[in-house]
Image 1: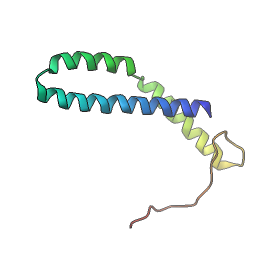
Image 2: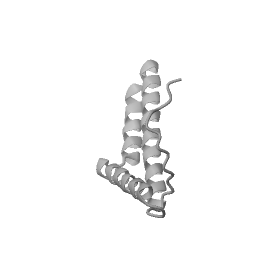
Image 3: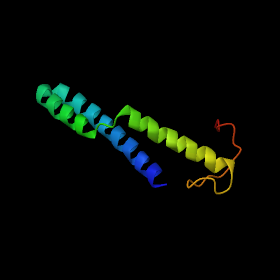
Image 4: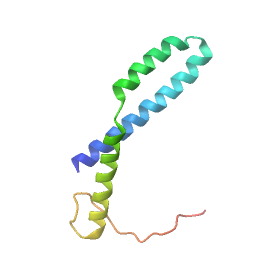
Length: 91
């Protein structure tokens, strides 16, 4: 379960970095200090970057754990409840 939590934290951190970069870029373009902001953002992005291969490994591990949890009782460290929901609500 620790790997799943760590993977989720990595994905959330990468998403937060990307959103922060987009917000700052939009604001700085409008203020005229864009070149300095680009340098800061580039450095921030490099420090927060997670390789795509690592993100795929985390996603694959989560998928395996979910399938194992749904396949049998105690088949995974990840707690799963079979729900049989096959449609999303429309209202």
